Amino acid sequence: MAKKVKFDPDDGLIVGEVGPWAVEKHDRVKRYIQAARGARAKFLPPKGNGGATYIELYSGAGRSLISDTNQIIEGSALVAFKAGRDSGHPFSQMHLSDLEAQNSSALAQRITALGGSATSYVGEASAVVDQVMSAINPYGLHLAFLDPFNLAQLPFSIIERMLRVKRMDMIIHVSLQDLQRNLDRHSRVGGALDIFAPGWRDAVDVNQATIALRAAFIDCWLQSICSLGTHPATGIPLIVGEKNQRLYWLVFVSSNPLGHKLWNDVQNLGGQGSLLEGL
Image (tube, rainbow, N blue to C red; front, side, top):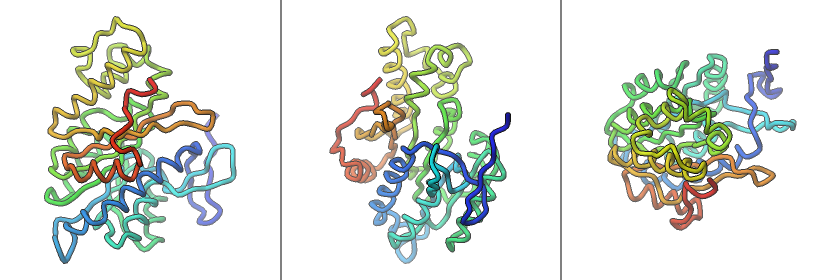
């Protein structure tokens, strides 16, 4: 049976559905955007002309219903727009994409209703990324929030393509839950792990205990990112659910030490926290 489409009674537009932990995820993105206002200012008039852009390739409809409740919350793109605007140094461009045209249309209308504007795309993230990267100023400052539902939806080629730009900061949602639940299936040849981290089999011994295998795989993925000339922050928050179930990590990637400092400061991690914790 097809899933029933739900709408926001306030604006009549479609809404997605998320778990309650999405609020915490969005809050972390918001706090980083607020903290980075000074960095954006250097690329915006009157100081600079490169621009400061915000990118999402899995943006959804802009508002979501929290599962098993009647509470509707703003999605990450609306949170990011407001955080930039309210900081006094708004993003000069927003590039937002979703697989579903109805979601992209609803999000664009919601951004417009807030007095903003965005370039909208529809399609697989792996295809849309080239359009986005061709549209942005390579001399600007860019922040990408990559928030896929699972590992297979984030091919490593997307990260490679985006990091060709010099000043590309990224906040990446990595689903620990998906890795824990589906390791056997994902690790088969041609499975999700081959998409998420191509070549991992050359660096990881598959004949080891499950926990060690997961840790080795994630370490391989991190090292692959480092090989692109940037590196993940040491402070990597692990998000848990209402029953303390481990759900996902938020991985911050930047070649700029200031970005790392700001991320760790707003997460209140002080350089602590490891992506391998909780495996």
